[in-house]
Image 1 (tube, rainbow over the protein chains, first blue to last red):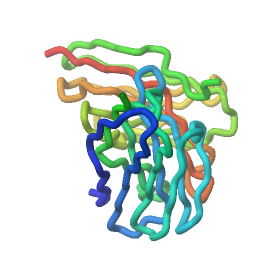
Image 2: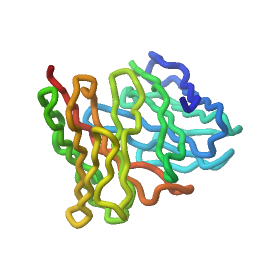
Image 3: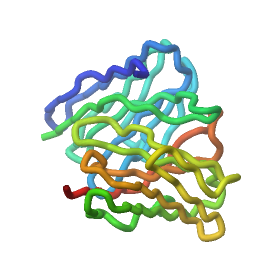
Image 4: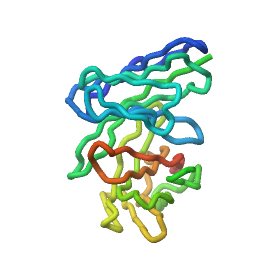
Amino acid sequence: DAGITQSPRHKVTETGTPVTLRCHQTENHRYMYWYRQDPGHGLRLIHYSYGVKDTDKGEVSDGYSVSRSKTEDFLLTLESATSSQTSVYFCAITQDFSGANVLTFGAGSRLTVL
Amino acid sequence: DQQVKQNSPSLSVQEGRISILNCDYTNSMFDYFLWYKKYPAEGPTFLISISSIKDKNEDGRFTVFLNKSAKHLSLHIVPSQPGDSAVYFCAASEGSGGSNYKLTFGKGTLLTVNP
């Protein structure tokens, strides 16, 4: 167990409202990631962080922002949610596996934008 | 442009037989490859990986084969069990660590193992 907690696990919101998803980890991992999973697209990287206040964009970053003010929390914000952002969002951290890194994922946050 | 491709959306096999899941990639800078398994309503879980310096890696019933010249990898599950029924994602990265470490995933293949 990598100690990753995502909240909320489920959220229904309306178009145009702001939404923040939280990823919390308890094991002091440096790298954290936000992915979204959609049918027909697999998992796509939104943003990632390589330290406190150090973040970078992934392949589908438009419409999303992130913040990491402390090691344990990585927040994903949708400033003005749109229906195209209806998805399942996964947070991940890197863990060592036999000398190489693997991503370990949280349980996901299902977001529905009406 | 999709850099990691899983061209079979689904695969159905009988219990006890071999399951072969395929994955192709286009980015020649990819040198580390992973397979993940995902059950409904759960996060993906790491299954097995392979570095580009190898052409085979085995872990119990799971074996991954890498053909660098063809930019192709495959996951073999022998023998297949009903509990293996899940979506399998192929993933790749440039390097296996550091600040540039991020995975590019395929669309996934739904494996169904019939009793």
